[in-house]
Length: 198
Image (cartoon, rainbow, N blue to C red; front, top):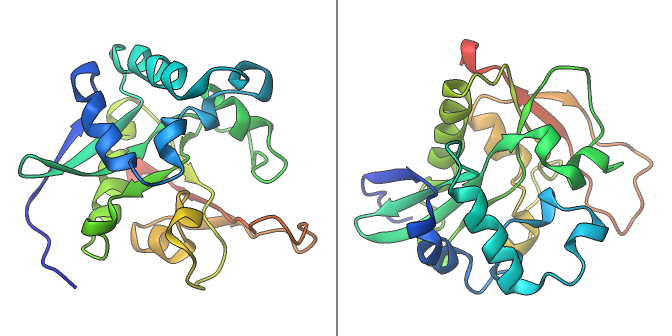
């Protein structure tokens, strides 16, 4: 395991879109630009990679960032999305991630660390930074819907995180993965942290 150098975590701005692209390169996210959680099927059809990048660039112009980038020196090494659940239309409508209650939670729908930088605690640092960012924006709670259990998986299948990772960041289980989930679906657990208590 390599040593973690000091990380600089920055909010995504239009000028950092190429850096986001470097983090996503080589993963499923390279064409997604982290827009999949935000768009329902109808809105996402026909956009293509370029259209999704343009959509994320528009979000990055807003005062409230759609996510954070981690840098080691000048090198972008990680990305995490963070947004109010109501802005994540696909998440909000999914039967795999139904609401637990009426709290206006923010959600971490995905997290990506470059292959060359994995295993050094970058994901954990990004999660903690995202929770702090959401707290600064007034979020009463932050949720994530990671893969249930502690079994290892292929990197591209872990873009929404793992249960042990979020436990280390202080999240607690709100709802276990349903036992009747289809076999071809990833079993996901609902986890939450309340920033005011973190």
